[in-house]
Image (cartoon, rainbow, N blue to C red; front, side):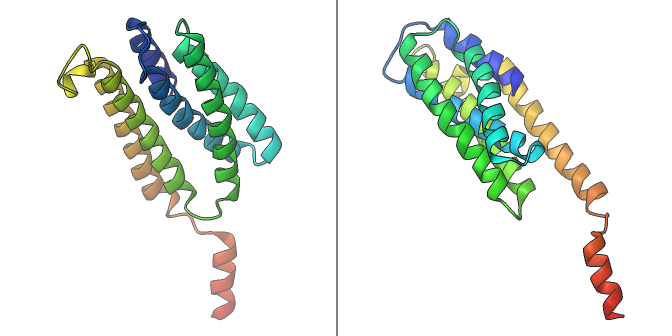
Amino acid sequence: MVALSFLTGSIFRKQLAESHISSCLAMFVAMTKSLLVGIVVAIWIPDMVLSTIISMILSFAFVVIMVYKLSSRVFIESLGALFMGAMMGAMFSLMTTNYELLGITFFTVIYILSCVMAIGLWNKEEYPNFIRAIPLKVLTTAALALFLLGASLVADAIFVSDEVDPETEEIHQHHH
Protein backbone atom coordinates (compact mmCIF):
# COMPACT_ATOMS: atom_id res chain seq x y z
CA MET A 1 0.00 0.00 0.00
CA VAL A 2 2.83 2.36 0.85
CA ALA A 3 4.71 1.67 -2.40
CA LEU A 4 1.58 2.19 -4.50
CA SER A 5 0.82 5.42 -2.61
CA PHE A 6 4.23 6.83 -3.51
CA LEU A 7 4.08 5.59 -7.11
CA THR A 8 0.55 6.85 -7.69
CA GLY A 9 1.40 10.22 -6.18
CA SER A 10 4.57 10.65 -8.23
CA ILE A 11 2.71 9.87 -11.45
CA PHE A 12 -0.19 12.15 -10.54
CA ARG A 13 2.28 14.99 -9.87
CA LYS A 14 3.97 14.58 -13.27
CA GLN A 15 0.83 15.92 -14.90
CA LEU A 16 -0.10 18.91 -12.80
CA ALA A 17 -2.61 20.17 -15.35
CA GLU A 18 -5.97 19.55 -13.73
CA SER A 19 -8.61 18.01 -15.89
CA HIS A 20 -12.16 16.99 -15.14
CA ILE A 21 -11.02 13.45 -14.43
CA SER A 22 -8.05 14.17 -12.13
CA SER A 23 -10.09 14.67 -8.98
CA CYS A 24 -12.27 11.65 -9.80
CA LEU A 25 -9.24 9.41 -10.20
CA ALA A 26 -7.65 10.67 -6.97
CA MET A 27 -10.96 10.11 -5.15
CA PHE A 28 -11.24 6.60 -6.61
CA VAL A 29 -7.80 5.62 -5.32
CA ALA A 30 -8.29 7.42 -1.98
CA MET A 31 -11.60 5.61 -1.39
CA THR A 32 -10.27 2.13 -2.16
CA LYS A 33 -7.07 2.80 -0.21
CA SER A 34 -8.85 4.04 2.92
CA LEU A 35 -11.43 1.24 2.67
CA LEU A 36 -8.60 -1.30 2.74
CA VAL A 37 -6.87 0.54 5.59
CA GLY A 38 -10.14 0.51 7.57
CA ILE A 39 -10.56 -3.24 7.03
CA VAL A 40 -6.99 -4.04 8.12
CA VAL A 41 -7.05 -1.75 11.15
CA ALA A 42 -10.41 -3.13 12.34
CA ILE A 43 -9.02 -6.67 12.17
CA TRP A 44 -6.19 -5.63 14.47
CA ILE A 45 -8.30 -3.35 16.68
CA PRO A 46 -11.84 -4.77 16.95
CA ASP A 47 -13.41 -1.59 18.33
CA MET A 48 -15.57 0.57 16.07
CA VAL A 49 -14.42 3.94 17.41
CA LEU A 50 -10.71 3.25 17.77
CA SER A 51 -10.39 1.39 14.47
CA THR A 52 -12.24 4.16 12.62
CA ILE A 53 -10.09 6.92 14.15
CA ILE A 54 -6.82 5.08 13.52
CA SER A 55 -7.82 4.11 9.97
CA MET A 56 -8.69 7.76 9.23
CA ILE A 57 -5.31 8.93 10.53
CA LEU A 58 -3.38 6.31 8.55
CA SER A 59 -5.47 6.95 5.44
CA PHE A 60 -4.85 10.68 5.80
CA ALA A 61 -1.09 10.04 5.72
CA PHE A 62 -1.40 7.85 2.61
CA VAL A 63 -3.63 10.35 0.83
CA VAL A 64 -1.30 13.25 1.64
CA ILE A 65 1.57 11.25 0.11
CA MET A 66 -0.54 10.66 -2.98
CA VAL A 67 -1.97 14.16 -3.58
CA TYR A 68 0.93 16.27 -2.29
CA LYS A 69 1.43 19.28 -4.62
CA LEU A 70 -1.83 18.68 -6.47
CA SER A 71 -4.67 21.20 -6.49
CA SER A 72 -6.74 22.03 -3.42
CA ARG A 73 -9.80 20.60 -5.17
CA VAL A 74 -8.13 17.19 -5.64
CA PHE A 75 -6.94 17.26 -2.02
CA ILE A 76 -10.37 18.16 -0.56
CA GLU A 77 -12.24 15.62 -2.68
CA SER A 78 -9.70 12.94 -1.73
CA LEU A 79 -10.23 13.81 1.94
CA GLY A 80 -13.97 13.29 1.55
CA ALA A 81 -13.38 9.92 -0.06
CA LEU A 82 -10.86 9.07 2.66
CA PHE A 83 -13.35 9.67 5.49
CA MET A 84 -16.04 7.66 3.79
CA GLY A 85 -13.70 4.80 2.88
CA ALA A 86 -12.06 4.54 6.30
CA MET A 87 -15.42 4.41 8.07
CA MET A 88 -16.89 1.90 5.62
CA GLY A 89 -13.80 -0.30 5.84
CA ALA A 90 -13.83 -0.40 9.64
CA MET A 91 -17.58 -1.12 9.73
CA PHE A 92 -17.30 -3.78 7.03
CA SER A 93 -14.52 -5.54 8.88
CA LEU A 94 -16.24 -5.45 12.26
CA MET A 95 -19.60 -6.62 10.86
CA THR A 96 -18.10 -9.53 8.94
CA THR A 97 -18.50 -12.78 10.81
CA ASN A 98 -17.45 -15.15 8.05
CA TYR A 99 -15.27 -14.81 4.98
CA GLU A 100 -12.89 -12.31 6.57
CA LEU A 101 -10.00 -13.56 4.40
CA LEU A 102 -12.12 -13.32 1.26
CA GLY A 103 -13.08 -9.73 2.14
CA ILE A 104 -9.53 -8.52 2.71
CA THR A 105 -8.29 -10.35 -0.39
CA PHE A 106 -11.06 -8.93 -2.60
CA PHE A 107 -10.57 -5.35 -1.43
CA THR A 108 -6.78 -5.62 -1.72
CA VAL A 109 -7.16 -6.67 -5.35
CA ILE A 110 -9.68 -3.85 -5.92
CA TYR A 111 -7.21 -1.34 -4.44
CA ILE A 112 -4.32 -2.57 -6.60
CA LEU A 113 -6.48 -2.50 -9.73
CA SER A 114 -7.80 0.98 -8.87
CA CYS A 115 -4.23 2.31 -8.70
CA VAL A 116 -3.28 0.74 -12.02
CA MET A 117 -6.49 1.90 -13.72
CA ALA A 118 -6.21 5.43 -12.32
CA ILE A 119 -2.62 5.76 -13.50
CA GLY A 120 -3.53 4.47 -16.95
CA LEU A 121 -6.42 6.91 -17.22
CA TRP A 122 -4.34 9.76 -15.78
CA ASN A 123 -1.73 9.26 -18.51
CA LYS A 124 -4.18 8.57 -21.35
CA GLU A 125 -3.68 11.96 -23.01
CA GLU A 126 0.05 11.31 -23.26
CA TYR A 127 -0.30 7.69 -24.34
CA PRO A 128 -3.29 6.69 -26.50
CA ASN A 129 -2.73 2.99 -25.69
CA PHE A 130 -4.01 2.28 -22.15
CA ILE A 131 -1.38 -0.38 -21.35
CA ARG A 132 1.47 1.90 -22.48
CA ALA A 133 0.10 4.65 -20.23
CA ILE A 134 0.95 2.52 -17.19
CA PRO A 135 4.66 2.77 -16.33
CA LEU A 136 6.60 -0.48 -15.98
CA LYS A 137 7.41 0.26 -12.33
CA VAL A 138 3.68 0.44 -11.55
CA LEU A 139 2.93 -2.81 -13.38
CA THR A 140 5.88 -4.48 -11.62
CA THR A 141 4.78 -3.23 -8.19
CA ALA A 142 1.18 -4.31 -8.82
CA ALA A 143 2.29 -7.73 -10.08
CA LEU A 144 4.57 -8.17 -7.05
CA ALA A 145 1.76 -7.15 -4.69
CA LEU A 146 -0.64 -9.61 -6.34
CA PHE A 147 2.00 -12.35 -6.21
CA LEU A 148 2.63 -11.74 -2.49
CA LEU A 149 -1.11 -11.72 -1.86
CA GLY A 150 -1.46 -15.05 -3.69
CA ALA A 151 1.52 -16.53 -1.85
CA SER A 152 0.06 -15.50 1.51
CA LEU A 153 -3.28 -17.09 0.56
CA VAL A 154 -1.53 -20.34 -0.35
CA ALA A 155 0.47 -20.23 2.89
CA ASP A 156 -2.74 -19.61 4.82
CA ALA A 157 -4.45 -22.53 3.12
CA ILE A 158 -1.54 -24.86 3.83
CA PHE A 159 -0.53 -23.88 7.35
CA VAL A 160 -3.56 -22.29 8.99
CA SER A 161 -6.31 -24.50 7.56
CA ASP A 162 -4.75 -27.55 9.20
CA GLU A 163 -5.30 -26.08 12.64
CA VAL A 164 -8.41 -27.44 14.38
CA ASP A 165 -10.80 -25.05 16.07
CA PRO A 166 -11.03 -26.11 19.76
CA GLU A 167 -14.83 -25.63 19.85
CA THR A 168 -15.31 -27.80 16.75
CA GLU A 169 -12.99 -30.46 18.16
CA GLU A 170 -14.91 -30.48 21.46
CA ILE A 171 -18.24 -30.96 19.63
CA HIS A 172 -16.81 -33.87 17.63
CA GLN A 173 -15.56 -35.57 20.80
CA HIS A 174 -18.98 -35.31 22.46
CA HIS A 175 -20.59 -37.14 19.51
CA HIS A 176 -18.23 -40.16 19.82
